[in-house]
Amino acid sequence: MQLLIRGGRVVDPAYNIDDTLDVLLDDGKIAQISKHLEADGSKVLDASGLVVAPGLVDMHVHLREPGFEAKETVATGCAAAARGGVTTLVAMPNTRPATDCPEIVTLVREKAISTGVSVLPAGAVTVGQKGQVLTDFAALKAAGVPALTDDGIPIQNLALLRQAMIEAKALGLPLLDHCEDRDMVQNYAVNEGKISQALGLPGRPAVAEELQIMRDVMLAEDTGAHVHICHISTEKGVGIVRQAKANDIHITCETCPQYFTLTEDEVLHRGAMARVNPPLRTQADVEAVRAGIVDGTIDAIVTDHAPHTAEEKSKPLPDAPSGMVGLETSLALALTGLYHSGLLHLSRVLALMSTSPATLLGLNKGTLGVGQDADLVIFDPDQAWTIDKNQFVSKGRNTPFHGRTVRGKVKCTISRGNIIYQEG
Ligand code: DOR
Ligand code: ZN
Image 1: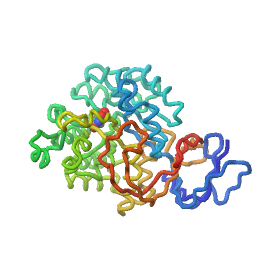
Image 2 (image 1 turned 60 degrees about the horizontal axis):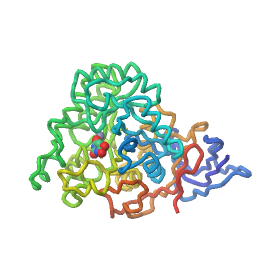
Image 3 (image 1 turned 60 degrees about the vertical axis):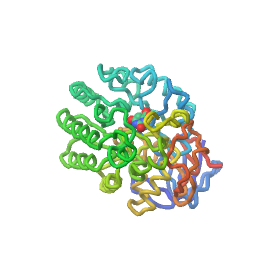
Image 4 (image 1 turned 180 degrees about the horizontal axis):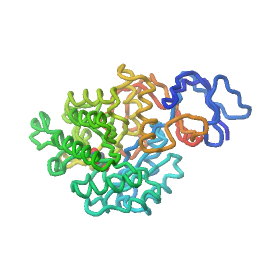
């Protein structure tokens, strides 16, 4: 089946392409990119006035299945991904049972097939994410995991973490780490600072994140492993990664729209909807995260899409679970916060959301190179719209961005040559 995408502004960060071009898809692959292509008999999609880019690669998504289907399923999470322009995602292993063996990896992958989205389950580092016994990394790799992580329940035992890095390095798998010292953050709801004080609640200190980033940097240097810091949120954390990179240590990191858009003040307006781990921080942290994005310290923008039920999120702040959904808003928030604000060129925003995460995971994704999988997002970069959680196809409605007006709207998402989302 052929599909001709005509007249769009084609942006491919991998090849430095930013030009008005036609793109021909054939048999699920990119067949040709050129000016004024003709293809008799193929379906034509008019992309004039729109941007045509590599499908987004979101390397941090909680799909919740198996075990927490009331929050999200593979099907609903992937529908949300498609609506957000995401064609490849890494699914976090904090499911029930945890994704700690090949059987669960296979189960999640099989459930994803009919969605059209490329779902790569990350393997748990420890059995049951209990932080005690390492999983069989080789078996997980053979089952198709692109990375290992105990996200949500980070490993605290340093001897075990070091051993995990040694084994991950031997297999060429990156280790993705949610950095927060568990004893310091407990189950606290907000950043430690003026908001925790105002609310009379214990807070999660920035240093709890920074200490573990520092620790990971030292262990990455020691073991030579590729360690990827998840959802970085603090000024000093960004500084530690910047320094580690300057020292040629194999560290990469990601952040999320909430960390370059919102501060801890949001908790006063939104309550539990603004509760997330790591927590929303201060204005200085937001600015440092933006600076880290601009200077390349931060390698990827991800969602940390973490759906919870309305019932769970309606609990009082100290009792509600942490997390916010993000798949249906990430491109618009990134365009609004980073591109329309003048911080980044369009191509750079797209690189952070596709080419760069694909590269750091070693995936053949995130580019429109001829012969590659025909994974594309087509969007209006300027269109203003108001985020409405009631329009989400995700089961999760837990967003602090409800009612916010943003710019940039996904019109069509194509995965391996198939249209998996089209507006209207
Ligand atoms: O806010 C969060 N929610 N942070 C995590 O690390 C886990 C996630 C979840 O699973 O809900
Ligand atoms: Zn996390």
